[in-house]
Image (cartoon, rainbow, N blue to C red):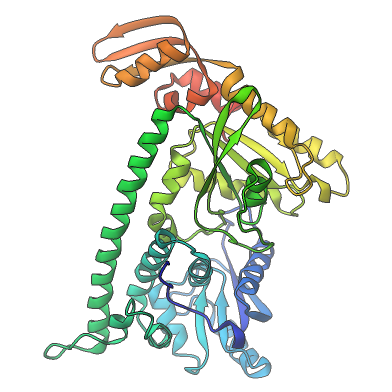
Length: 452
């Protein structure tokens, strides 16, 4: 059984004031209002009641308190009026901002930022040992530079949890002149080092698993998308799996892989992955590197997009940005326009299909359009040969032999340490060759098969 990660939030008693800051020119496609609405949903996921919201626009954050002095006084007055015991910021606060803000509020009022909130949601939903390890590492790396009275609260909650976090709460003996804060930091660094060792073992295991999977020749299709877009529902619909599904953010964390049999007895491995979100904490991206490699190693990405969501386009851009951050933006991608049964005007799906050349409109819940999706998958992976020109290092003998065995070689030239090949390959092998594409073929592939 997976160890429980540190509980951040006493959800049964939390009443929060949400704070959003718009700084200069927007750096994302999300409006401040959209971002705050998402923050409300994140809070709701862990049972926090957001009693009101406060916004401000500044050229740059206040170097001490993040928000302006006047706005800070307004929030203090709202705390007294509403009885709120949490200030929930829509961005990640620096350690200095956190320390300075805490000086302005009673110790019963906690300052929590968006990153801490997302980490807590991940902690609640990590169902496997691997997931728990990854979330715990992200939590500790986030908290290490932020050890304040908020940490004391967390350490009290973590105490007695099977010995996992007890050392952080002060189990170790202090050296001469050593403060409790120094003891905590030392113990956290020790725990971080241990977690990284354990996750490295996980990474090695996954690498071995992927090597065996590649030898099987069965193509891997990874489901990606914004959180709550319907990925798990689609996995269940296509594979008759029993993956947990809920109408909430980050309902599933751990990757789940199922075998799906297409027509003509062709098979694929369909992998559900963690949902993306705008402002995804860098701590999570780093900690979930082993899991995110499942995306990077896929033969095809199925981008599940909730077309019924009012800001579906902004969510799509957030997904594409995350793919760039994890260096998976070179992979072929299909867009699955999900939840079309919720559209008031069906013509909207046709307009979106024109925007995404490789797309299919479906309802994973009702099954509408699934046959067409499977047909397109089979056609791309098994039915069509894709024209490419590549320059491959001679040491990559596997790729050279695979091209000759599975594809159609029109021209092959050996020059120095590289091999130039022009020809066609099946879609299930296309991702293997995209790192070696000639620039002009890469441009064509971007238009036809990849991120718009």
